[in-house]
Length: 593
Image 1: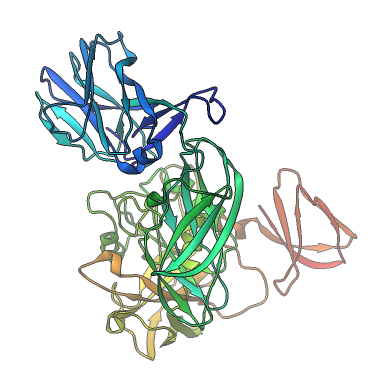
Image 2: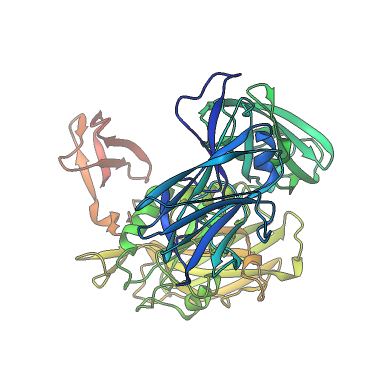
C-alpha cells in the first residue's frame, strides 16, 4: 500500500556546481528522486506517468536548457519514450524521444535537441511497455500528476507520491536565491502588546545555501511588520522550519494575516509568487486568561501497545500541571472498565479507523497548522507529537472561567459539586456551550492488561459521568451530587469539569473552552501516590522513615528519590546527577522511582 506523503516539487543539485557565470546543472522533478514506492497499473500494453512543472518552478529557470531526462523503471521494460508537452492531452509533443531502457533502475535519455526553457509550464512524462508497476517516490512541494492506463488515456493521480522522473537543466542563469514557502504554522490568538510567534517551512531552490530570510507580515494589504530571521545553513533542495516573532498591536480585534518571504541572504528572492503563506485570521485578545488543557486518552486492557503508550504520554507531559488527563477505555474493543459514554466518544475518530492508544487535546482538530498530525482530519490522533499538541492548545486563551466548589462527606461518601461558569471571551455559538462533569480514579490495579505481565495500574481511569455524555447547557451555577462506591479509592479520585462547544453534525466544531479539576478527598497530612509511567503505583514505592544521620544517599538501582517532609512538601530530590544530600534529622516520606 502506498503511504500518504506530503505533495511536493523538488530541485536536486548535481555535485560540483560551477561558480556564477559558468555552466551549472540541476535536476528538476516533482519527486524527491529516490524511489520509495510502487504504483500498480493495469495490464495494458502501454503505461506511463507525467508531471506538471508549473510556472513557479520554470520561471526561475528561464534562459537555461533541459538536456536530459531520467526515469526509474522496473525490470522487464521493453521500450521507453520520454516527452515534453504544453498540455497532457496535446497530440503533438514539443519534444519526444524513444530509447531501449536499462534492464532495471534509472535510464538517462540525452535529448538530441535540448529544450530551451521559456518560463512557461511544461508537462514532462514517459510511456513504457512490458511492466505492470511504475516507480514512485516522496514529494516536498505540490504539483499535478497523471497516470497512463491504456493507449493515450491519462488519468489524474489522486495519490500523493510522485513519479520517479527528473530532467537535467543546464545553463549559466540558474537562480541563487529562491526560497519556497511550503507551509506555515500560524496561531489563531495572541495577547495585545506582546509577540505573535508563527513559523514557516521553506525549501531552498536556490543554488546558494540560505542562512537568513526577511519576512513581512501583512494585515490584508497593510504591512504590520518585517523581521529578519537567521538560521543554520539550508542547502540546495533542503528544507527548514523557521520560527518568526512579530510584535502585536495594542488594539484588540481580528486581523486577516499572511506572511511573505521577501529576501534571502539579504538579496531579493527571484520568484515571489511562491513566497506567501496562506491567510489566517489572528485574533488579538486584550485580557488573556490561561487555560487548562483537557487530555482524553483512549486505551483498553485488550490493547498490547497501550502500556508503552501510557509511558510515552507520562514522559512527554510529566509535571504539566496545566494538563487534566482522563482515560476512556475505548477505541480498541472494550473491557471491564469501559463506560457507555466512552464508547459514544469514539464519534471523534475517523469512523473507519478506530485504534488505541490514541489521544485528543481539547477535542480540537488543527489540520490547517499540523496536517501531518491530524492526517485523519479529526480531533483524535496517535500519541506522537504530544508536546506540540499540548503547547498548541496552551497558545489559545480560556474562553470560559470555571470554578468547582467541592464537599465530600467521609462517613457517607457523599460528594457534592457546585460548579460556577462565566464567559471570558465571545464565542461564535454561545448557545451551544455545554458543561460536562466526570469522575476519574488514578492507580487502579489490574492483573488482566495485555502487553504486560503482573500487576498494572491504570492512569486517570474514567469512572463516572455526572452529566450526559455531551454535557448540559452552560449556566452560571450547576449543582451535582454522587455517592462514591466503597470499592473506589477516594484518595486518588478527581472531579473533572469542562465547557465545550457541541455540534452534533460536526465533530471538528466541539472544541473545549476550558477545564478544571479538583481532588475529591478532603485535605490531609502526608503523601498520596499516583500512577507513574502508566503502570507503576508510586504509593507502593513510598515509605515513611526516621532519619537520624546528617546525610542521605541514592539507593542502588533507584533512578530518582524524592524526599518529602510530613506536610507533603518536597525538600530534596536525588538522582544520578545529585546522588547525595545533607539532611536535618526528622521524619520524612521517601518516594523512589
